[in-house]
Every structure is written in C-alpha cells, then in structure tokens.
Amino acid sequence: MNATLIGVVITCVLVGYWIVAAALNHFSAEKNNRKSDDHAGSEYPAQESWYEILEVSPTASVDEIQNAYKQMIKQYHPDKVATLGKEIRDLAEHKSKEINGAYTEGLRIRKAIN
View 1 (cartoon, helix red, strand yellow):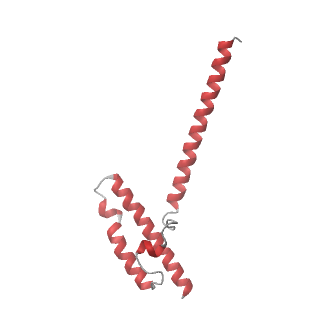
View 2 (cartoon, helix red, strand yellow; view 1 turned 120 degrees about the vertical axis):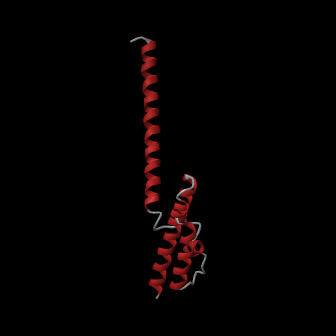
C-alpha cells in the first residue's frame, strides 16, 4: 500500500465514524423526545406545579380543580386552533398536555388527602 491509499482509508474510516456517531446521536435525541411526549399527558414541567398550571390555590378542592380544568382546556384545546399554523397547533397541544397532567396530579393529591 502506498501513502495515498493509506490516507484515503484513514479518511474514510474517520468520516464513516463521524457519520455513524451523528446518526446515533440524532436517533437517541429523537427517542428521548418521543419518550417525553409519551409521558407529557401525565406529567407537568418541573418549574410549575399543578396548581400553578391550573391557576388555583395549592389547597383547592376537587370541585375547584375540576372547574379550573374545564375553563383552561376550553381555552387551550388543540381543536380550537385546528385551522391555524402548525406552530400554533403544537403549542396548543403542549399546553393541553400540561393542563391534563396538572389536572390528573391535582385530583390524585386531593383524593389521597381526602
């Protein structure tokens, strides 16, 4: 083998390694995004608690939680913006998942206390 052929082989190996690593990182990130989307309906962001999302007090009753949920979901349901752009629909879907997760968590806590 001459020096040129060795250089080409080394270059191809390095480029191939880079492409495979980039592809694996991309698919790994995509998988993590899907995982978080799958659980988004039952969770809420760490920076906001369920009562902040529903805009109720931390000691709200089940009825108050249900009323707040109904009002919030009316405003942010994705069907309300179905004819608008994808970004708006995605935002409404994200907010709806947040609201649903907060509602579930609020009811779970209230029922555990009562």
